[in-house]
Length: 511
RNA sequence: GCCGCCAUCGUCUAGGGGCCUAGGACAUCGCCCUUUCAAGGCGAAAACACGGGUUCGAAUCCCGUUGGCGGUACCA
Image 1 (cartoon, chains in turn orange, cyan):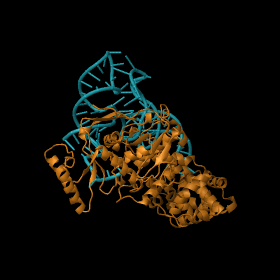
Image 2 (spheres, rainbow, N blue to C red; image 1 turned 135 degrees about the horizontal axis):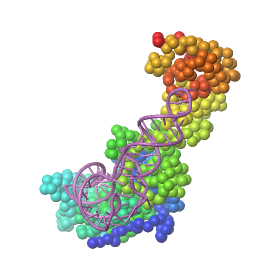
Image 3 (cartoon, rainbow, N blue to C red; image 1 turned 120 degrees about the horizontal axis):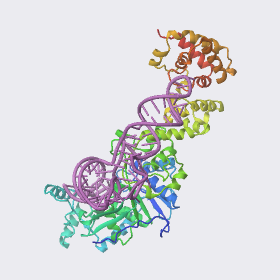
Image 4 (cartoon, rainbow, N blue to C red; image 1 turned 45 degrees about the vertical axis):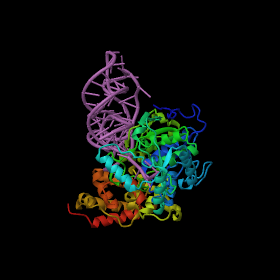
């Protein structure tokens, strides 16, 4: 058995790696999936931890689905999360180009070399013929492997096939000749040794007739030519690895260190999708999650720092990050924990920063104008409002609905709240409150004075605060739950409060 | 079907033969604080998938079973 294909398990910067070079190679065919950004994060952390390079490269050989707009989105999401890259299509680098469709000549040369060595051969089979082979294998219950009929063609047969294809306006594909009796093995950075017998692998296509390379070939050529030292990717790639090892071997190259991390799954244990939770990075931005919270949360999916700390700054995560502490089992994405963590980060923001982050969401809710057009006074007022909700929201998207009653003149009254609290029995209390508050001028409208008046009334009448406060609360906010009453009244302002109190007096329900 | 990977509370995980009557976090429940809602404090409930080995001793090592996931493409 041939076992020389072991890739190094060495730790970086400890034995002989001149430079740590890792990469993330997404295909720009759609929105950025959380799983991809998770993989990107781990690569980024690894590079940053060991002073290596983090490279961004696009695998855009799926011509049908690849689009520049998706490339732009990848840039955007990476920047949003704070994952910066040292080399990439936009910033260039010593191993440019970083887009596979611009590297076709490179693949052609490597393919040509493999052909000269006899490691690949032309295959003229049509999709229909291959399909028939597969069907036959399936029916006879044997494992499907390409028949290799094109490998054994005589010269005249080959000529004929060539003509046939040319007439149809097509060219043959290049197929890899998988050797028999070889053990393809590597010591996975996070799973230990993994082995596969080459006999279980069918001769795979490495290049289409049109010169577009296929994944298992292009990825190897890119990693070789870009001098990638460590490949950290999702466990879905484990089954591709043996084929890639074959290509490295044929090319006489030592494979990079390989590490396969677990996938991120939805709550049903299946791949993340709309059904079991949002799958794309942008979804989480829209829902009001802070990038630093998502960063922290994603880092903890499949990795834990030695001290078990959960709330960690970006710097602390880089500092503590070790591939040795990355787990191998898949992780279910727990939205509730993310929400908790987002709340923690939200609460840690200072007032000014909170306003800055909340503004886009308030705007989207139609409650405030363009950030640039706000007066200092308006900004100040927004600050007071969001301040009241800072420890009451888990995501920024909640800020609009939560604070609506501060911004609108007309508010919506929750029907159940009205039924329960705004009863005729509260009339004397509300009237007394209006009478007391009316005397307060706008300049006296402060938490202390409001507290003095309202508590004064409660004390004089020997009431419980709740009896008086809840009707007021529902009258001015439309609901039974709000920030502390005095604060709410103070921020709401004299005019809105008195107007709503009077309105409520006109609309009390029986009881 | 075949090949491969994975398997500790509902979830994320600690644990790498005795320190485990299995620890932490989220969620849940209870109590405290309290003008409501939060936040915060305290506490409770909750797991080593199953079966064989190895060993004086197994959550930790080995084998099998079961389950989940992935691959089996001229997708990446």
